[in-house]
Image (cartoon, rainbow, N blue to C red; front, side, top):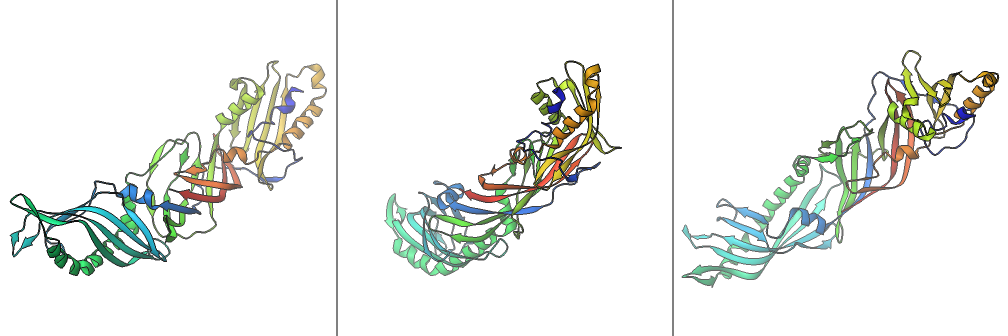
Length: 409
């Protein structure tokens, strides 16, 4: 019988036969509610090479100061080689900067010319705290080893003044360290960190996040990079009609709750019609699908090549085994011909049983959700469907996505 498989592909998916489904019927809504905000925890590792390579490039001026600096004269430092690093204790890191220095010192108010030098400038620091908002950098210490001692040109000839500079510089280390500590602790405040995102992250067409909040829990200095838990608070909306847009992440203190992210998948009636037409190997124009708000049910009519007609009134239902089924409310058959009309009740019963036997599993929904976003990868993905809603032209499936999330940079 040609009708037996007409609706076996509704909400097309890998199906498993379960007779007479019982579940919660989809609810009609004139306006959809957005998925709830939720959080996930992402095991994160960012290598020092990646971190320093992003913010500190060879040839970049990394420090400069005017006459009002702690040294009392203007100076600047340019990074000559890649930054080096080593772990020196529990959550303590030393960062070494190969630098080229230029300065304009003064002696008794008289310019001593332009001083140049090269050195390995080292900063040691200790990171404390559990999340943004209470991270603190402490025990900042400075060290400097000349690779080319300071010199000034007198009558065109370089004259070494390393001893004089050391006598001036070394007593200033404690003051410079305090100033640097204050600056670093200002930089890691959430308001300051938010400036690193610039114009934001471009989301692809079909994906939307109404907001994106971030925090880093238990950040630690490891041997080759930073490690901790990236906590993300957001909600996902997926649908073919969602336009591409940018979103700017916001760093703020967050608490991880249930380690799952709420999502909403929007499925248009035209998508469903297209899937039906493809599976039935018929033109989409032969499949009509609409929603009757008054009766709060779906109405589908299919006309086959022999002009036979079938009209089914139904609603999707959410079944306890985390799948979606169909509840047939009523059915009409037309233009069957005399012989087939005699068996119309049997035909209806077979079609209804066939429809009731179908399930939409979660795989088609998972395929629409991002499992690799900005380098975040998911494993052991689990989906829990929570409710189904529909309007005049769209079906919304709400649920939660959980898994084991990792980020490596």
